[in-house]
Image 1 (cartoon, rainbow, N blue to C red):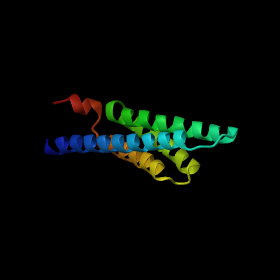
Image 2 (image 1 turned 60 degrees about the vertical axis):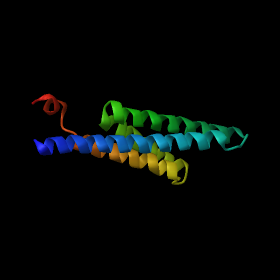
Image 3 (image 1 turned 60 degrees about the horizontal axis):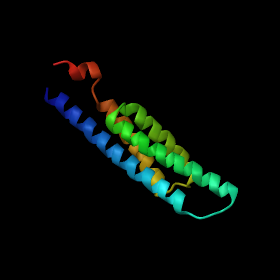
Image 4 (image 1 turned 30 degrees about the horizontal axis):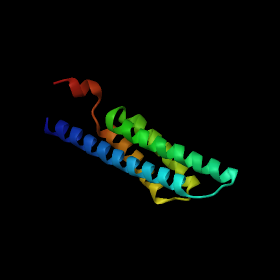
Length: 119
């Protein structure tokens, strides 16, 4: 019984930490994509893709916190990998990737829904 409560607490902590990391990383990616100059078409397309991925990281973080934690974690990891490649391992991209990893770990620790409601 105590271990079940502890696993739910750890799952919530991992979910909250993953949410915060993905939220902060996505906000920083979006901010940097929208404030950096460059008027060439390729630069604008590149920055637009970064802004969309930053918004996707924020959505993935919200999904980790409120909805399916595993899917949100996988989405954040996928977006983090793409951002790591695009931004040459910038700190916000590392935050998004780490948030996704924490979401996946939290989903693995979290008990199944039928065990959660069974008392």
